[in-house]
Length: 197
Image (cartoon, rainbow, N blue to C red; front, side, top):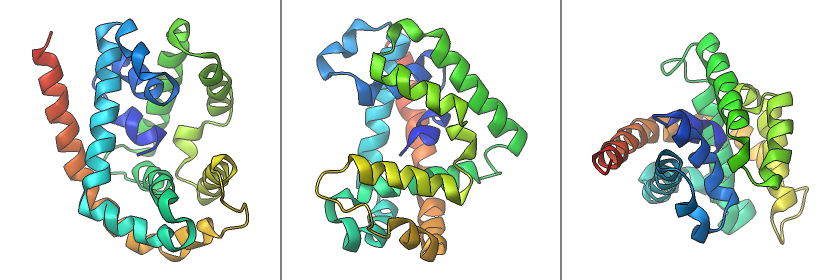
C-alpha cells in the first residue's frame, strides 16, 4: 500500500509517524523511537506482508506485470491509493481533506524524528496535497512516473499509467475484494500492540 492507505490505517498520531518512517529508516533504528512510533513501524510491516500475500493483490499485479515484471507491486500500491482516496464509504470528501491536513500536521509536529530526505519529501507532499489528491487520475500518473524514475532498469516510457486507465474496473474489483480484509487485519494487529503496553 502507498502513503494514503498507510496513513488511514492508523490508530494514533504516533502510529502515523511510524507508518511513514518505515520506508526511510534502517531496521536497526526502529527501537530508538517512542513506543507509539515503533507501533506504527510494526503496523506498516504487517500491512505490507498481508498485502503481498492477498489473492486480490496477486490479481492486480497481473495488470502491470507484463510491463514491469517484479515492479508490479509498486504500481499496484499507487493504484490502491487512488481507490482509497475515492472510497466515500470510508470518508466523505471533507473528511478526506481533514485527514490529509491532520497527517501533515502530525508529521510536522514530529519533525525531530524525521530523516532529512523525508523532510524534503514532506514539503512537496504538503504543498501539493498528495494525500487528498490521489483521487485524481493525473496525480496517479505523476506518482507512477516517480516510481519509474526511481526503478532501476525500467524505461520511462513504459505505459503503466495507460494500463491503469484501461484496467481501472479490474483494479477496482481487486480493491473491493482486498481492502476490507486489510482493515480488519490492521485492527487485529493494533489490538495486539495495545496488549503490549
